[in-house]
Length: 605
Ligand code: F6R
Picture 1 (tube, helix red, strand yellow):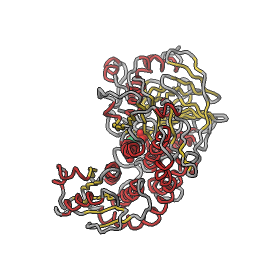
Picture 2 (tube, helix red, strand yellow):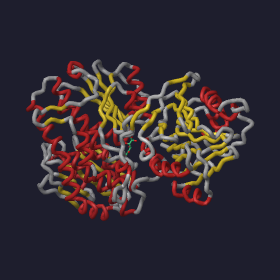
Picture 3 (cartoon, helix red, strand yellow):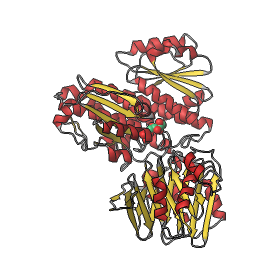
Picture 4 (spheres, protein in one colour):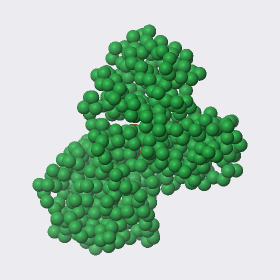
């Protein structure tokens, strides 16, 4: 949420700033701004809308400065507008900020000297820093004093025309990375902005402040004590952040799932020996054996992947109890967990504020936490006791797709490993292992075989205003995920329900403004699923059935997905739903990758 970039080196900063902002645009795209500084002044440019609008301004106002910072915004305080866009100026300093300053109202009322021009909490922080920035004060000291009075979350970058030799950055709750180049230093709130510029980076921790100069970086804490820097290598290649011939990142990310899933499974599933081994759990076989309860937390799609995973854990591990909670809810509940609980913390970005807060709460209660995370080096990945990277590669499209698939699969692998630690024999888990192994090629064939047909169906239903998705058992979380995907990018109001729940209320909605997506597996619940379908049909529903069954199904459209998988078939059916949401949105002409009001990586509460 909000992207930050910065650069100090020996060549014009603007080129990196604009390239970095384009790459970080998925983190917020309602306005953008840059400032470059030299000892005579600054070039401040801000624009409402996308980075392209800002880029246009930079082509008219050429800056050759070698120091600058930039920002792409997802509005929290104040509407998207040029005035509310970052950087914010106070005196000689300019500030970009990701996060929320919670005590900004009190601070603002005390900052009488500054004439505020925006509604943002960020300008308050800029004014606060400026209030400490006297002629004989170092910028870093002014920033430190201001942050000592600040309550909330931030990732910030500050520059000053009084000292254009440095950028001061600090972090509490919002990610910041410092890229170390050969003769320049870069700032980014997300590693993707650094690809092609450097592979060496320092991931700032909460409570750390860095003074970034062209030739090096000095770290200290809020008490002004020096800290030694830990330089890490970024392992993302350029192709992973490019569209590679696809029209949209979303389509690319849906279509690359066979490969990303192979990376998720690679070296972890051994079909011959019927074994799963996840490195990084930091749990002995004895500790795995002793797990009695698993609590799964996540938000949005990650939560739905957790919910699907919970069904698999229950199927796999005899006697294990599992619960799944939305992190945004659990963190405020007076919850109680049984002894020998392990928490699975699911997050694509590894930065989601609610999930992070929940993780910290769980750790405080002494619960062992395991991350199922995509973004390498992210905050959650660094704070969990152990865990597994899902290795799905960068997800650029705001709507999460490939992460869901890899998360559900990783929870399943975890289930197999726990089951085996508890004494399950090969034959008890072999079906899961075989299906895990076959899943990438099954997904591949679904995408190849059904893409056109899904596109045709999507075109036919794109004019509807409302949709209901329903499924039973493992297809219930898939229905929830299908509805989320559709609503967030096509703006069709879509809700997911457990098929058995329709008759308890939601079926009252069925009318001609609705279509319904019925998810049906050819298993022991087939007949039960048909009853729900019949009930909707009886009320004039417009049903699209997505199924792996060849049996007759009475629906307006039947999308038969030919898959030999059984247990993991829900993951395969979900691929069709992802394509459906994509093609509906395409038909409606909306921005597929950057839907309105949203942003990737929700680092605010
Ligand atoms: C939906 C979507 C969101 C995220 C949610 C959690 O397509 O992308 O619902 O799944 O914000 O994000 P992560 O997984 O980064 O914690």
